[in-house]
Image (cartoon, rainbow, N blue to C red; front, side):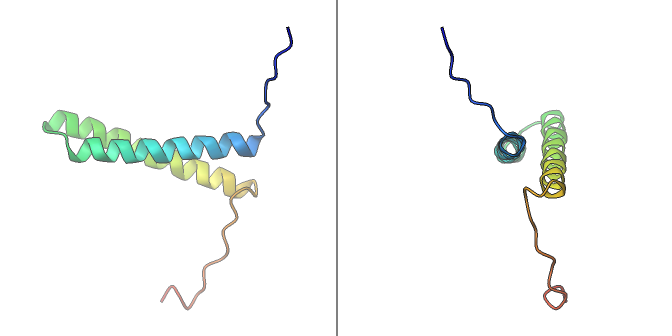
Amino acid sequence: MQTNLKHYSERELLADALETEQSTTILYNLATTNSLTPDLHALLLDLLTDTHQNEFNLLITLHDRGYYPAPPADKHALK
């Protein structure tokens, strides 16, 4: 029996991981803001912080590999 497995590129895998982290961030943010106990709130806030860090790391990786181009900021727009 022959299977038709799709082999994903590095770019597709990284983009999928980024999308997953972005979705997870939204869910943890919602759960954190609706938590009713200090311990649960602290735990969810830690998990939310982790997902933000993961998202940032993935963006840097995508950018460094040329998959997520970011034009330089306009110096006048920063003032």
